[in-house]
Structure formats: structure tokens, C-alpha cells
Length: 105
Image (cartoon, rainbow, N blue to C red; front, side, top):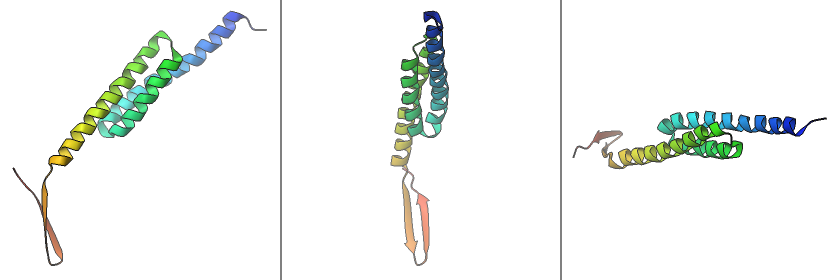
């Protein structure tokens, strides 16, 4: 027979697994946000969800990392988009060959 304290301990252990998942997803999300911003957004959102579900005091780290992953992902998307937008390449086709040169401003 389980007592109320044993049942409470079991619930807390289950929730602490979510907190660990939130921290792991947050760390991976921050790293991937620099490389593949869209994955940073997804993992950051998952870290926030798992952090909110877990609710122990140290799940705040997972939520914080999730927020950072989303912010970095958005920033890197803007940076990558700006770089691609301002990259000017001029290609000239003559016969069977195509020559491309980067234009300077």
C-alpha cells in the first residue's frame, strides 16, 4: 500500500524527468539556433513546454534556455536573411559557359 508521501515522491520524480528534458532541449536548442535557426525555435518551444509541465524550482533553467534558443533562432534568421538579401551576384551566360561574379557596391 502506498502512502500519500510515496505517491507525492513518485509524481515529483516523474516531473523532474521533464525538467531534465527541458534543460537538455534548451541547451541543444541554443546550440542549433546558431546553425539551423528553425530547429532552435522548435527545441526552444519544447524546452519551455517541458519546463512548465515539470514545475520544480530548477526547471526555470530549461524555460530560460528555451527562451534564449528562440531569441537566438529569430536573431540568426534575421542575420542569415539579411546576408542572403544583400548578396549580389551577377551571372553572364555566353555560349555553353556561365560566369558569375560578386558585385561590389
